[in-house]
Image (cartoon, rainbow over all chains, first blue to last red; front, side, top):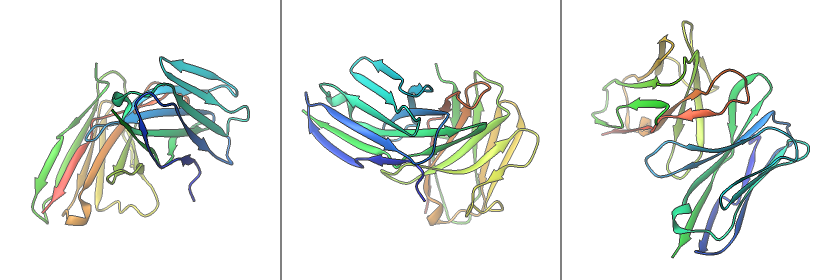
Amino acid sequence: TQLLEQSPQFLSIQEGENLTVYCNSSSVFSSLQWYRQEPGEGPVLLVTVVTGGEVKKLKRLTFQFGDARKDSSLHITAAQTGDTGLYLCAGARGSNYKLTFGKGTLLTVNP
Amino acid sequence: GAVVSQHPSRVICKSGTSVKIECRSLDFQATTMFWYRQFPKQSLMLMATSNEGSKATYEQGVEKDKFLINHASLTLSTLTVTSAHPEDSSFYICSVQGGTGSNQPQHFGDGTRLSIL
């Protein structure tokens, strides 16, 4: 059972377009993290959201944590070719340090 | 700078060889580290939780005798793939919890690409 549903799994867009990636769950998470991974490298942390309803911005990236802390979204404005990569959401629950990962979104931004 | 150092980055070896992968925490004293496995274009799959000074906790379906984990110090965990076979070929990644508290993010190593011929 996939506790964290991430969509879409694949996304190919043109440079300059906007996009949104979603992570949804029926479970409540104490925090949710977004990572970006390039081929042959480990995931790099983009943001951690902790409070329900929280919105965080990182340049052209906007992250939102749902009010009930069950879902999150990542919105990229005016995508650039450098945004290409695998985006992963991961949720933490309670005092358990283990992360539950979504299946990932493979984003390709074409010039 | 890097928070987690993972070595080696790439291993190619013959079937039947045992391979050791090291994961070092550079910035934190890590009582807990995690080992993941990742197939191409897929997400990370947690294999085990490495606990300093005690036995690792393995996820369901992961053979503990196949994937030996040793966490002898607060900065080093090792994963040994014993008698590796081609089906063990994968990308192995370790992570370190960045401080205390479950809301602290995990920091990942750069991974080890294991190819068994």
